[in-house]
Length: 102
Image (cartoon, rainbow, N blue to C red; front, side, top):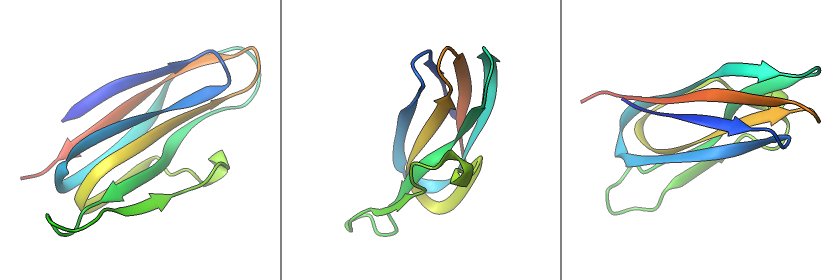
């Protein structure tokens, strides 16, 4: 397992976590939020590398945070980009995890 905290007080942000391609799950949850308005955490995108000598495949869920999933899974996951979206005057954290299987 790998984990990190994404924190922002400036409208949100992203955090990219890279691993060697393997069977893994990326998962994010909102840690805390302060201030009035909408707040969301999710996965902005991820990459996979099906072949050790091949290029990576990129999945991008776009800028609209309503389309960001909380969890992604792939047998060859190599990177997850976690995201936090906040309104003005807010701050928040997201807990970002990658769970690996051997």
